[in-house]
Length: 495
Image 1 (cartoon, rainbow, N blue to C red):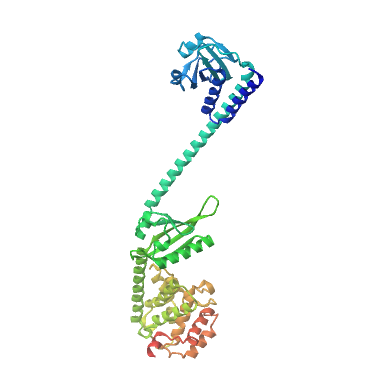
Image 2: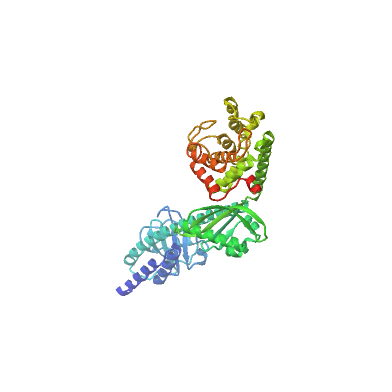
């Protein structure tokens, strides 16, 4: 073999070694090329982790021998002399017969890769001595040994990564199954949409509410699922959520496609992708219709209780009949002028109906006496504020009605009773009722005095504005009478 032929062999083997990335493919290709260049029909690759003195090893690769191929991957006996540190091209027939169990191999070429791997090339006739083995193979075998190590490391890394991927995938699947089971079990309607508003999924509670199967909801816009008015509201809320990126919580009355009305509490928020971009909207709503009905039933019961207490006062003192109704009407009108919310206005009106309930404990002859009360009698009457608190405090109201009744005679400068509260320590509702109560009393007849005229009543409010009465409440009250033509309920009927 001349120099050019030798270089061609080296080049071919080097390309083969550098081209493969798995151990199996690398060993297959290298053994095939070695068989081609040596003319041997059979090639083996042995693994012997215990070193060159090992008496057992594993057949990693077999090419060219059907019987030996059946043992590929198995542990086999390695007779003494088969392994060694040097290249050997004259392995004797007797040794090969013991090793292979076949008499047909007369010659063998041993190519040690490293202390744990050896290539054997087997032939039925003596090998041609055309290749300068000691010069050609050592660098090739060294490269092959390193390539095997790299491929093994690469395969181990790939196996580790695949195992981790499989574990992550299994964990993700478990989490998805758990989340889906949780969604299915939750009685609250849950849905999620992409950023354009199309439904990506929902749970059975949502499907039942809408009256459509989940597969019929997914991919649709709200306008295809809800009535037009609701769909427009949802689209507006979605747009606000995407713009502000602030979670939403609101109550609304919805109508399903079947026409069922429901009071619901809606909660919505955004979810994000791996790049922190908006992935879509997730939301839920709770049907609170039963709670609303219970609240309305309770409200009606409270109103009836308030009416009963107010009626009891009328029977105690006929001279003040209608006083609570008129005070309540004026107090609510003042509250509206001050832009109080609907809930607060309702509590204000009910509190005004029972603000004097404590007078039920005052002897009726004192309340109806046709003269001004003396000091002792007035001190007795002043006890009605505290008595009212005692009567009302154990009744559960959604508003501080007992405290309002307790404070409705407190003055802004602290000169009132029963506790001498001042300024903002007095509930706003109590400050409003104080003005409404005083105005109604001045405009009404009492056994011990005649009613005052409108001018005198207004003058009294203006005189004590800031000392006895809250300035803002006085201004609201005067605006009602002087600018808006407000009249107390009895006055309205007279007209």
